[in-house]
Length: 103
Image (cartoon, rainbow, N blue to C red):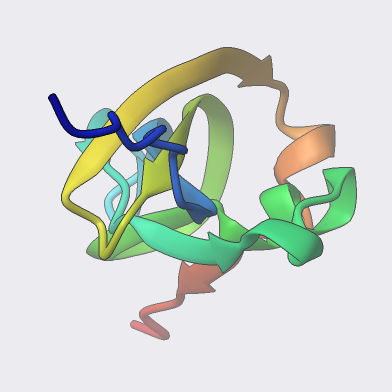
């Protein structure tokens, strides 16, 4: 019999995704999905997570809150494992990416 090779997971980084509550251009609260963002494993920090929060492709006045899922990514994004879910308030979302509609 041949030797068995040990398989080690090839941890590449993290995917940040989730759902945000936005105040839309008409002043209504709406839940929308974030556009997922990949972070290399050496770039994960509290501040980079906050900067990954976005309202997808929705125009908005502000992001009111966020439910953020952090996934560990292995290989070439072929395998993802939920690492943790965090909840952020409006004040914590102030550094997030928002598309403003100036109407």
